[in-house]
Amino acid sequence: MSTHGVHAGSIEDMWQTAIEIAKRAGGDRGCPGLFGPDAAPAAHKPDRLVVLEGDGWGAVDAASTSGFETVLEKLRAAGVEILRRGDHPYVDALERAVEGASDTCNAITGWENRWAQRNILNEHPNGLSERLRARLAVAEAMSPDDYRAALQKRAAAQRSHESLAPFADAVIGFSCPGPAPLWPGDRPGEPLAPRPTGDAICNTPSSMLFAPVVTMPLLAVGGMPVGIQVMGQQHSDARMTAIARWILETISPVVVE
Image (cartoon, rainbow, N blue to C red; front, side, top):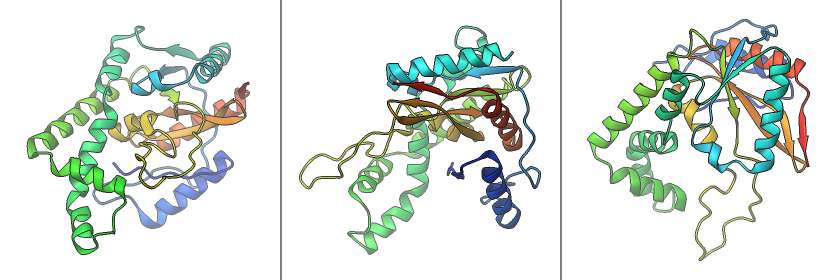
């Protein structure tokens, strides 16, 4: 469930960087890697997008939510149908399936990383940050059944997401729950900030689903960027890039003061 991505100033640069890496390095162990053309796919208009709220919806500030709704209205005006919670049972099922995605992802990666992290700590007592030490303690308190349950929840969520494939081109949602936070740094003797550089709560569903995502700079709130992402079925990276390209070429960014 490691999440690899490219930060770039354009769709063309993003795709070119990703596909060149993939052609040389391939995928992670047991994974086929990125599929697609040598150059960025042409823009493709989606017919129907599904809004995924997930656990992150409740953490998004009001200004960002307002801006997101404006983006959805622009998509509707451009002829894209928008489905969301309550519009279709499969959408509702996916919302339920990704509840607690952050906990599921953290449980799986924590369990799978625990031996390597324990070895680092045993060999180098100061080799892990306080945050990683805390994550390791949680992982070492898990049982094999806890890990198996997390794997089952992930597999069920992936099946639920796959059920959307026949009637939705992609999922759309927030990349983050609002503008990036200000963080002055850790202070000795004070509790650690749980998410000092931002909350990944809007990203863990795609990690749980093994789903490709393209984040678009469509929203600014208070002078800070807030990303909106499209998410597709497994191995549909090129298709998501094409859809994101169409959205960027068609929908003007929204600025909320």
